[in-house]
Each structure stands twice: as C-alpha cells, then as structure tokens.
Amino acid sequence: MKRALITGVTGQDGMYLGELLDREGYEVFGLVRGQNNPKVGVVQKILPNAKLLFGDLTDLGALLRIMDVANPDEVYNLGAISFVAHSWENAGMTTDVTAKGALNMLEAVRIHAGSKPESIRFYQASSSEMFGKVHEVPQKESTLLWPRSPYGVSKVYAHYMTINYRESYGMHASSGILFNHESPRRGIEFVTRKVSDGVARIARGKQDKLTMGNLAASRDWGFAGDYVRAMWLMLQQPVADDFVIATGKTHTIRDLLDVAFARIGISDWSDYVSYDKQYERPAEVDLLIGDASKAKEKLGWEPTVQFKELIEMMVDADLALQEQEG
Ligand code: NDP
Ligand code: GDR
Image 1 (cartoon, rainbow, N blue to C red):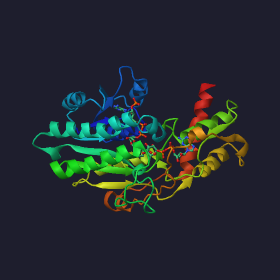
Image 2: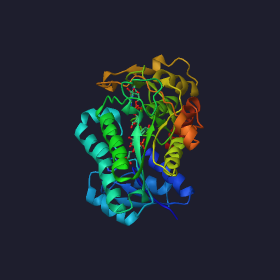
Image 3: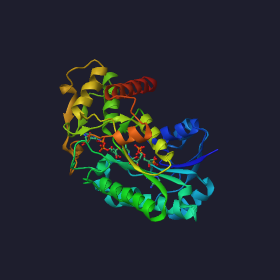
Image 4: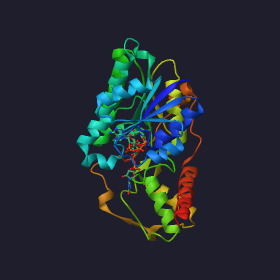
C-alpha cells in the first residue's frame, strides 16, 4: 500500500486529493495546523480513513517528526496562505508559510529520504499568480514570471526552490502551475464562492445585494476535482517536471455574475450588485489564460468540467445549503 502525505488537507484541494488517493488505494496522512482546528470534523467526515498529524509548515522540527510517522512515498505540498488579497496585509506571514514553508517541506523530504533523494516524490502547488502581469498570452511553462502580490512572489520562491532541489539533490520534485480551480468546497473569500453563496442567499431572500470589487479581471477557471487528478498524474511520471494545468478559456467576473444570476432566473443583475473599493487590490492580475498542451501530451490530462457547468454546480450546492440551513 503506497503512503501519501498531504499538507493543506483541510483546504479545498486537500480534501479532493485525499478522496482521489483513497480511491487509488493509498494510506493517506494529512497535516493539520493549530491546536483546535475547526475544519478537523469536516475532514474526518470526508476522509474517514485519513490519519491526521498535527504541525505547522513554519516548524521544520514538526515536519521532520511528521515525515517519520507518515514515512510517505509521495508528498503533496498544498498548504499555504492562499488568499491573494490577504497577502498584502500579511506579507511577512505569507512569506513564512507560502514561501519558506515550501522550503521547510523540501528540507524535511530531503533529510528523511537520506541517501535516496529520489525515493520520495514531491508535488509543489505552484500558481498562475506567478505570471501576474502577463508577458505572453496564453501562459505556458516557459512564460516569464512577473508576480503582482506577496502571495505571487512567495509562490515564485517556492517554485524555483522546488526546481533547485530537483537539480541539486536529484529529488523527484514536480511543480503544477495550476490556474484558478473552484468547487462547492471553495473558501467563501474567493470570488466564485462569494458569488455562488451570495446569489443563493439572494434567491432565498436572506440578502439583498452582493458587494464586489473589480469586475473586469479575467480568469481561467476549472473544477478542483479535475485539477487534483493532474497533481497525482505528475507524481506517477518516471521523471519529475513542471506542468501548466488550465482549461484554455478565460472569463471575466462579469461573465461569472451572468451565469450565477441566470441560474436563479435573473438576467439583469445590475440592481443586485454594488461596488466597494475595499475589494480592489493594490496591484491586479488582469488576464489569465493557460496553455495546458504539455499536460495533455505527457500526462494525458484534460479538464472535464466547463465554466458554465462549474458555476451552476456551485450555485446549486449553495442553494441546497441555504435550504438545509432554513
Ligand atoms: P485553501 O486555502 O483552501 O487551503 C490552504 C491550506 O493550507 C489549508 O488546509 C490551510 O489550513 C493550510 N495552511 C495554511 N497555513 C498553514 C500553515 N502555517 N501550516 C500548515 N498548513 C497551513 O487552498 P486550495 O486548496 O484552494 O489550494 C491548495 C494549494 O494550491 C495552495 O497552496 C494554493 O496556494 C495553491 N493554488 C490554488 C489554486 C486554486 O485556484 N485553488 C490555484 C493555484 C495554486 P487551515 O484550513 O487550517 O487554514
Ligand atoms: P485569485 O482568486 O486572486 O485569482 O487567486 P479570487 O477568487 O480571490 O479573485 C479572482 C479575481 O476576482 C476579483 N474580484 C474579487 N475577488 C474576491 N475575492 N472578492 C471580491 O469581492 C472580488 N471582486 C472582484 C479579484 O480582484 C481577482 O481579479 C486564486 C487563489 O486560489 C490563489 O491561491 C491561486 O493561486 C490563484 O487563484 C490561481
């Protein structure tokens, strides 16, 4: 039975990945931070077979202890401060967790693997935010990185550190440059879930309006369930490498509002959406659209869920949740 360690198991991707690895017959270990993490109950319900280990990405000693307990064949480093807007106000902490946390994890894997650095396969959760002020459309693995936030800068550090450990120590370390991916498990702070939740509340008469920031930004949105499959496929390759994972289609926040409101029968949402400057960012990433042809060719990976279906799935899930809550 293969063993896998997931950092960030309490996050959106951690839960989907844990389910996939469980189906594939792995023994799954998940890193959980904090002394009383409120998401433990949810994870235990979704991943009843997973073993939860307690520690923090900023604590190398804890990570070394966790590596001893889990003794994994594969490590998926998904843990991060992942909300871009939050990263300006918490730049130091974002650097400690999202950048140096990845270094700590690479070190823990390198030290645990000893004389066989290639024996543990490592996945780093890199991001399309590394492209930032884009220098090429669409963005691919070789596109110049120009991050626009403390989060993006931290991800660039972790990305190059992963490549550096592969080149310096011969580790089987891969980076997935994943574009935005969403699901009903997406955190409420991110724009898709904020909209699906808000629209469901408006439909149920619990909320009057949605207050939003920049509606002109474009994102390449896919489904998280598809994207964790790409992570796993990367670690099944004989040689470690870096891959862009994306749908190749881009939509604005306005398009997102169109689809979400249409799902509850509202075609003109202008009366239901207001603007607040607080949701604007000090520097914006205007346009993201990925070219995942390398992943298609080498991993056989393709997305199965398109934008409209994804947003409708999220609105339907939030409508059901509102119904349950009464
Ligand atoms: P989430 O924000 O849902 O999950 C982040 C996870 O990191 C949570 O489990 C969180 O724990 C954990 N974490 C935060 N700080 C620490 C810490 N100090 N020590 C240990 N764990 C910590 O993110 P997603 O699931 O959406 O994303 C997974 C990864 O992929 C992240 O690294 C993200 O940056 C990256 N990514 C995501 C994309 C997306 O569109 N979703 C696209 C590209 C990259 P807790 O629950 O306790 O807060
Ligand atoms: P992003 O996701 O920054 O792309 O990072 P987010 O959903 O937060 O923002 C997407 C775009 O929507 C605009 N926007 C708003 N965003 C939020 N959150 N709230 C609003 O009210 C709002 N109004 C407009 C933003 O300005 C932005 O342009 C996500 C995270 O999952 C990262 O961890 C990951 O690396 C990248 O995707 C790829």
